[in-house]
Length: 431
Image 1 (cartoon, rainbow, N blue to C red):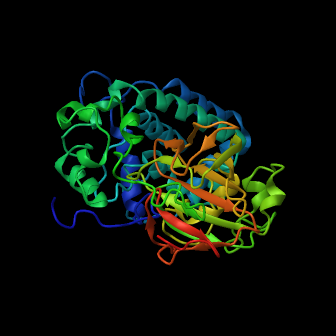
Image 2 (image 1 turned 30 degrees about the vertical axis):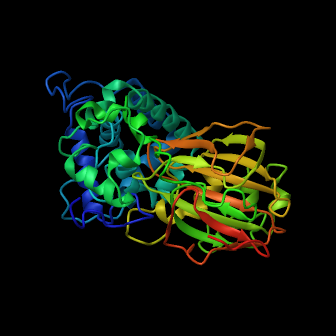
């Protein structure tokens, strides 16, 4: 492995360089549609927009409020006057989105910023504007974005998306990409991940970009330590720790920095909500390079699951010029974004009922639950997965649970999936 290729940059999804994002968006407009890297002559760059993008543009033009906001957010975005790569109108933005949904995300360097979440990279500069906030919290816009993601997903689960699973530059099995992914895990790609073929020129056996994105660790990689100890709680995801907060309220001003979690909104007013008021929330952030499956943090029984529709690019407004505003809005998005809830009653009555919350952000809007009510779980069992990009998640516990984090579990640290992150006070503190 080459030295110093992987530089940790957890908790970010795009670079802190507005001009780079402008250049990315401008570049998307000039690309031909679909599979352009395999056959540039096959598809003309001046084709009409895809039907789902035409529908989005028509929605903007038919709704006077949206029409106004889609104009004014371009005036409100912070930009360098010297940057020549501005996209000046919603029509140019539609062209960029049209190109993105016919391509698979490419490898974007040591942290995969920008390329790993290409649609967010285009939209991020507008998310931290008043008009952008109005746009991305609008139910009609979110319904249309959902349609767009569905069309894009059809391509990302198809064999045609495998063109980025090659050894070419900016592809996922290029020498640099393999080195970066190996350095993250301390072992080779092939030794870390379940592959159906040992040859990178055969895509390591992956059948689509999404098949690669939702790849699984080999059995030796993330074993549960001390699985029979009921007083230990494990990490449900491979993630960077955002925060651990106690005494969480039923209702709070989640849109104001510092007020953080509002349980009734997180749980969409579920009847279980009162049981968790005053309890603890642990939140962790996944990157586009991370493992995207969810695993049970306790032994127990699934009591309820539900999928909650929501926003995809809404963020808490602030005055920070850094365009990555969604990454700064981790607690905010738990109340408004598309998400999945899995309530698990632990076999340990001291833990009792707890909840795993998967929050799909941006193009990572697909939360796939693979368990159902009544299923019995062992610690480390599969719960579901994210698809198509970066995301965040929470573990929520009742106030009666005497929960203690291990000393190594601090904001800013990365916790491996199935590693011990909490223990029950008075129980075992082995880790």
